[in-house]
Length: 426
Image (cartoon, rainbow, N blue to C red; front, side, top):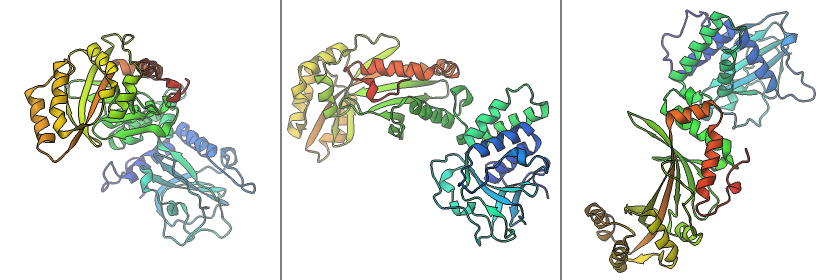
């Protein structure tokens, strides 16, 4: 049965199965000449050859035409050349071993045959972690002895393919049927393989939490001086790790509930005892951060080793900052017997508040434990919140990353930090 016949889908495999994705894309290539030639050009641009290997060119294959098939087990291949193609979500993993025929029993996800000239065997792995590079080696069974196997595979990314398809939809030469097929395919990917979305803009994410978070990650990578510093904190979100003593992380956090969604640019200065000492020694100044755009708040908490235990509220940011700037020397670890006196003094100085709830938390998390010391962390939070609709529009207009850079620089100015150590020059 020809599985690329539009009316012959897999009945026993769900839409989330990678074979369904392969079939859907090959149907697009079969019925859309725009998509097919775009795909071939993408392959050509990624085709690495040795000095004695012939580069592929569509012009050499037009006269004999081509055939596209899917899920073929050890088919007869007698073309002049054979080329392996891998399509996945990320090409960061590389294959250092030359492609060569092997004794394996192969079932190819896709096969493109260009007359007697070239066979392209396609392996689709929507998750690159599932890639086994041995699958790129063609089976020696039914392979003609004089067929030349290209030594390097072509590595393609789904996000680039989806970008290309989105671009094709804007072409005036697209037929109505091609347009409908491509739009249906993109909807199929959104529903069944959302992680393959290219995340070029929030408006493409369609409210999907996974897509929104992936877009956040890519946004931070687009402005970071070192992309490897983009990390993910479970329960919080994506952040940019900094080289500064005063602050360890700059977060771009998605806050989403049933009613609304927003993006929060988060700066928690002095989050540890050592960070706090560096922060207040820098004489922090928040006078340039104007409400309602910026929200600044004290973030005093106590910790044991690397675990934050209890947070305290404070009423006056300016008073809080002034107090700690004048008392940097008392930002230090307190012995168990000194903790009550230390915290009472801060309450009396109106630096922190002490509620019944906080007292209960202290009792449970410290006084009723065997801990003998507590770290005092007079942190300070600086937040800038984007309404999601505003962020979506800025992103669609290509302005959001520039606004992010501007706001990050404003926040880092609080302790006088140089953003050039953290951000690209856009």
